[in-house]
Length: 321
Image (cartoon, rainbow, N blue to C red; front, side, top):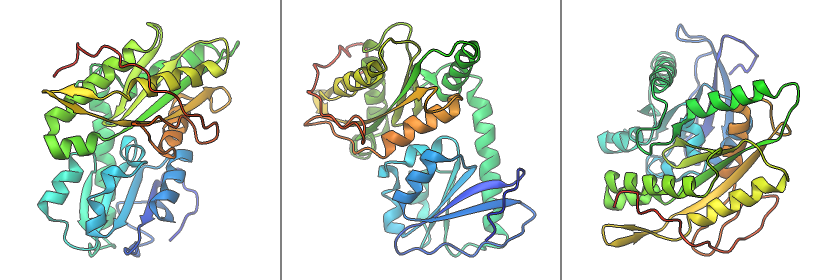
């Protein structure tokens, strides 16, 4: 498989999970060109996704393991910008295909798929569908599920601020919060209940920041907060810790309590990047590599460490119940 740089080629991260070997994809295809980047295991893939941009991610996994992919810490990274395709060791079946499709996976195919024609075709069409989806989402200024800005609007806003500050750079920070527990809520209580929890999370995050700060929905389980100005570089970490702690108290849903856990990542401008997409990828990548904690505290950053005391819940009465 060639990894020679080609500006016109689609960059594909090929991930081989335990018990599932990657297919031998043809070097040339009418649906290409492709630039193949093989790696072994989801942990290695998470590091790659946090550091580099890919057009598509191809994950080969045992069928039983494919069901757990939505719980992968870097799943949101894999479905945010790239087109994610999953290859299973057996015929995936309609239930598994629909489960993953509802979580943002573009296609689910058996590993026995024709690697010379069908697989390159599926990759190219998935990337094209993803591009069209991004265009459609740009028509909305907000994420319809939460009422927050969507990822496209956040990136556009950050790039505008960066352009204004080129002559006199002023510090900014992007905070990513990866929320664990939403997939299990959806599995146990249904999608609408999970959406109610997402809206309540959005309310707590908005309450926890200034009016000048921007809160956005990056994916179904990742939120981002833009701190456009602050005095002390440590302020960003303090705000991130406060927001993560605000998600610690359980959410009251239909007479019951639902708890989630959160992991955070912080990217600083200009140290960690001078483009919005780079900063967001850095922040989400850090959140993906950080163990999420919620019931007994949280981990805010793998390098900085630190365990905060759970804060009182922000008033989320405006969320649905």
